[in-house]
Amino acid sequence: MTGPAGTGGPLLEVRGLTAHHGQLCALDNVSLRVMPGDVYAIIGANGAGKSTLMRTIAGLHRPTEGSVLLDGTDVTGLRAERRLAAGIALVPEGRRLFPSLTVEENLLVGASFARKGPWTMDRVYELFTWMRDRRGQKAAQLSGGEQQAVALGRALVANPRVLLLDELSLGLAPVIVRRIYAMLPELLQVGVTVLLVEQDVSQALHVATHIHCLLEGRTTLEGSPEGLTPERIEGAYFGLASPAGQASGQGREPA
Amino acid sequence: MTWVNTIIQGVLLGGLYALFACGLSLLFGVMKVINLAHGDLAVVAAYVALGVITVTHVPALWSVVLVVPIFAVLGYVVQRTLIQSSLNRGPLNTLLVTFGLSIVIENALLQFLSANSHSIPGGTLVTASFNLGSQIQIAYLSLVIFVVAVAVLLGLQYFLSSSKHGRLIRAVADDPEAAQLAGADYRHVFGIAAAIAFATVALAGFAFGLYSQFDPTSGTDLLLFAFEAVVIGGLGSLWGTLAGGVILGVVQQIGAQINPQDQILAGQLVFLVVLVLLPQGITGQRRTA
Image (cartoon, rainbow over all chains, first blue to last red; front, top):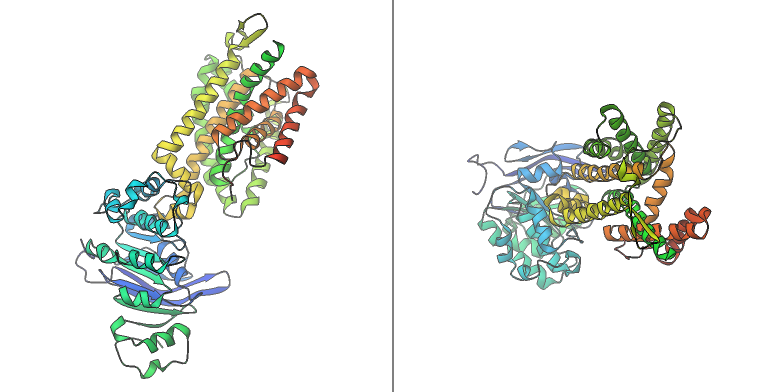
């Protein structure tokens, strides 16, 4: 069940995406190709356009230019709710659970328009064992880490082909963040492809198969983590007149 | 004994107010829309019911079967067109749009149906009553309206807490965008909520038409009573709405008992006191951001 139906192409492709918040250009001609089975990490400082990119891919934000393709099909014109049905699920920044609903109800809402697939509520309860006992609790009463787990579960029960994770670590203790990221291999096993946004670069480098750095809405660096030196990443991250040019490796730097 | 009677009548009247208020409460709770045309819609429902009865000669109660579904459809359509497009332009716009709708409805009724007052001919149901002891006389109609109001609130509560669509309505009320990410088209869910709200307002308008005389301008008072019931009870709580309606009804009856002119004033005063002392309403429900 992994990947597109034998096309060999990217599962998720973004072509020349430009997006604005009013007058402000948040994304400037960003392109990326996420292959099936990838853990594709977008890194960048505050205001680099990471969240706008995620929201645009999920359909919450209309791009000014460019397109989003899922398994070769253009989904740029689809509303967010249709994209979920197509197989793109976003775990939004700040978790955004339904606070007055219980844990179980949050998952049920997530499953309301689910695609067919391996993820069920039971499976989520197996992944996060504490959740079954506390399924009757209101989401508002959970701790940040627990809320993040429920938000992840709510996206998983929809059986997405591509899971977008926006700043999972935001506001969480490092130990919780590590625990949540430790789940990733299990997700990949059942054929979920992951595109994530992370401010914590070391965490991103640890889990990612591909790194994509944004700075003020532009791509400054991309490549596999092994091919990128810390100096180059630092340079691309902060926009320093970096030693990037002379560094070796497979990283591609767009002009 | 007179006072016991007053309170009983007040409680029963409160049922009618709660029936009016639950649609208003639902619209505000789910999409943060204060529907200023709420009362006028009830009056329109009463006129439509009267029209159905006049044309088809069916017994009064049968017209409900037609009027309530018509209003449910109307609610969905009005939400998806007028209200949604004003919501997209900011929260204040919905006030203006529903206020405009209210004026249009009122004047259209005056224009086409005259300012004469009417009531829905309910036959013996309207006039029949029974006695409890020597002093307390209970009209069947009041009792039936109260029972219907409680049944509607119970049904609504059950629907919201236990059905799939009810769950989606609550999810959308919490966070429309997150619901969208879960695959729910919140505009459609808003439409469903509006359909339910309009159905209840049609029922309330019909009950009002049986209970009392109505004319094209009755809607303003109805909106005020519904609004007071919602605020007294606490926003977002259906049981609070019932309690709010009952409190309003009892206070109005007590006011009327003291001096018939004071009926409305007494309700208003209690509303203001609650607003000052318990701005969250008596049920003190969650703050709506």
